[in-house]
Image 1 (cartoon, helix red, strand yellow):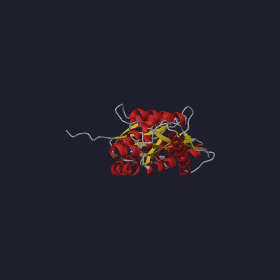
Image 2 (cartoon, one colour; image 1 turned 180 degrees about the vertical axis):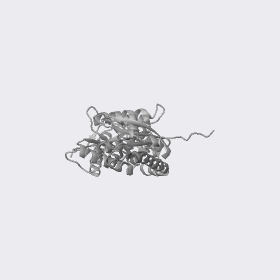
Image 3 (spheres, one colour; image 1 turned 90 degrees about the vertical axis):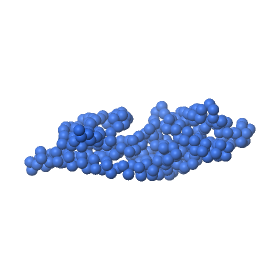
Image 4 (cartoon, rainbow, N blue to C red; image 1 turned 30 degrees about the vertical axis):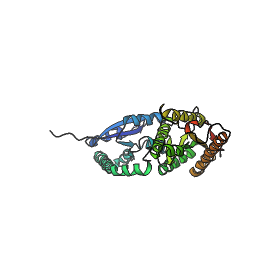
Length: 321
């Protein structure tokens, strides 16, 4: 018996208030090509929508023309970080086109043909995305940690800041590097140094949310860009990150990990470029390091001590603006 081919799992997202042609049966002629699921969403509950999409884990996401452009852009930015390989398509206003063409009495004949054409186009495009995904993964992701690399971070963070400026959203940037990496490399070898970097990246993933933009810029330098929200202060995030770092190496490890961290704030009323925001956070990072060196010079721990003896979890914040 011939095995039934695996269908492409497609999720159509539409405004709950609208009557989408795609969700009303317009795609019935394409069911031999795709397993199509409808998701009507309340745009006032953005995060629940994102979580629902991630939970359904579609092969391709179809955003209906009933959704407003700002909502579509915001969703695409957040989903790119949570599901980087998910193809996202904005569907055309086929229903509107059919209504406009009703005067010619061709709408009934055009509907299944149009749906089938769109479905086949999506299927073909999805099949061609395999190599592109692999290349994109190599181009935007860091091999060692799985975080975004510098190129990926700049692309995503630039989009986030543009969105933040347009919507009035405050943002926070964290700039960090791993304490004592040279000591680990010198004493235990670069293999252990790579392990320390990987552990630090794992702690960053655990500390920040999946839709925050996190990256390893180079060496032991890490960065994160998040939305500023009530009840989620930069100080509490840094404290949680330091706790995760201290706990992640295990009881048998000869050292405990920690990071020096600088913070900068993005004010949409006085916006700065991504490069300027990174510069401000970098200044905060070196202020943190300066405080650590002052503490060390007072004899709090020997200069040759491992990273676990770094006593400072102070947060250095760059001036706003």
